[in-house]
Structures are given as C-alpha cells and as structure tokens.
Length: 189
Image (cartoon, rainbow, N blue to C red; front, side):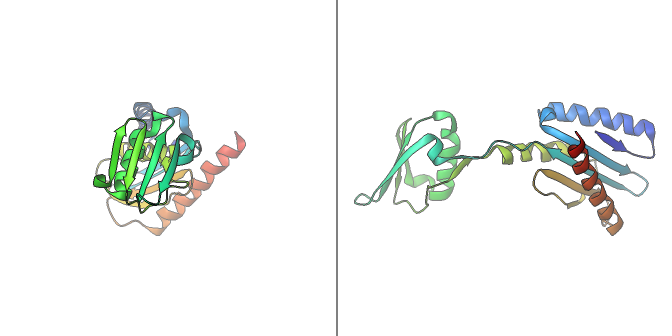
C-alpha cells in the first residue's frame, strides 16, 4: 500500500486509517494493491484498489434441477443445496414477481407462468459481492466533503478521482498513471 501526500505525517495516519477500514469491512486479504494520491491544497484525492479475482458465479445448474411443464405452464425447481436458496428466491422475485413464486417445501420452488429463461442464471456472484465491499471501503476512506467523483474502474481495479470541485483533466491523467502503477506492482509480486 502506498499513500502519497506532501504531508508525511498525514500519509502515515491515512495509511493506518485505510488498514483499519479494510479490516473492518473484512476485505484486507482480498486486496492485491492500493495506491492513494492526495493533495488537500488542490483538493484532490485519488484512490486505486486492485482486488483478487473471485470464484466464478454460481448458476442455477450448480445447485438445482428444474423442469418446465408445458401443460401446466409451470417451472418446477428442485433445490439440491440450500446455501443459495435465499439469493435464488430474491432473484426469482425480481425476475418473475413475488406473486408467481410458490415454495411448497424448502426443497421445491414453483414458478407459475414463467417468463425468464433459467438456463445459466447467475444466482450468486462472488466478484460482485467483493466489488460492493471494496466500494463500501472506498467511500469510508474518501475524505468527508469530496463528493465530486469520477469513477475510472475496470475489471478488478477500482479507481476514483474525488474532489469538492470540478474534476480537472490533469487529475484524471494522474489517476491513469496511478492505475498503471498498481497494475505493475502486481506483475512484480
């Protein structure tokens, strides 16, 4: 982790704050690299976080068996592993509407008049979950008041330029340099 600032004491304190927040949000071990550039005189705060690639998404076929009954116009789902059942129900309620979903037992779900194609439906995505946690940590890290934000994120790198005024092009260029530095740090390790 690198915290770059003209104020050396400020850098040390911010380093401690960042470490504490990453542990609090429980993503410390998933972070592969962090670089922060800040200059309160401008004011600009640039943060770039590279995180581990997570496991692939869990899809319907991984934990269910399902069959469509054309005559009854119903989709019958048999749950083989309850781990992702809450997320599956939430997903189905969004896709089909809560009123069309029945759950006669904890291992069965029936969809009345189904519209959505269940094949390959991602029910649990560890990468998206991790990304949300990283964003949560970043918004805790960004100094109060710097709410003008330019998001330059891509893949497993989240990068943001923050200020309390219009984002300058030179700050975006600096952020792109920082992004490249974080990517290179990973290649060396």
